[in-house]
Length: 326
Image 1 (cartoon, helix red, strand yellow):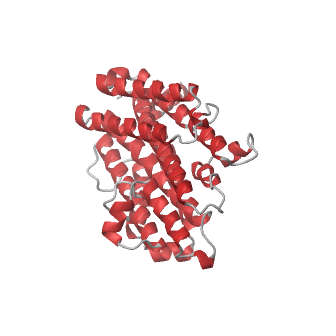
Image 2 (cartoon, rainbow, N blue to C red):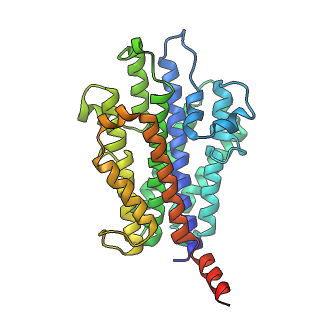
């Protein structure tokens, strides 16, 4: 497969997952605000922190009110990670490799793109209750995933898209967890309170994990939630599960059998997956969850860079080597 095509498919997977994640946690935060006691301020700043675009937001906004935050995260085209920017980039990548997509996938992605742009023109962020829009975005992306599952052959292109999707999901799950623990952590007398429970419940719901968590763990506890979202081997949005699936995608792409590694991307992925596989939640919390997650995000970004170096820059590297030989 051409590196240009592989690159577009990989980023198509990342941008689709980013779109769905943003719609997911904006919607959950809106629901949380409705459940908070009336004397508490709405907490929209943590959503900005979760995306990693805090500095960009502060450079153009003075406050963190609902409308400004929703506009920035969903409809601001100058924010490179907003829903409208992500779905536009997903569509553009899909357009460039349209011959590699099924007709149904292209049509649904195009439909989602136009739906988001129509909502932007209608200034949905100014509505008193914009939740229907975010629910529809989530549904459209999940439908796209379903179409792909049932119509796309399991060739290299499939694994590049899955690789992008799982790396993006691992990154977003870790960010959402970090925001709750590091920014929304209540004072000592609020630990275990109804308010604390609401925040942990909202965190689980933001990754569609609440019901599954309750079945597996029962009562909600900080250590239980951290273990579930970081280390659980079976939940499809846990960081470990995502990295394990991404590692398998790399093996399928390279044709490796899973013993050792054949390139630097597989090596970095294997090292991080192995670390999470044997990490203990009590050690993570006692040594500092925020520091652990910060290190984890750096490692995920490093893996993404190595994927780029190994698979998307091959032509450039070959050209430079040829020029050097001349």
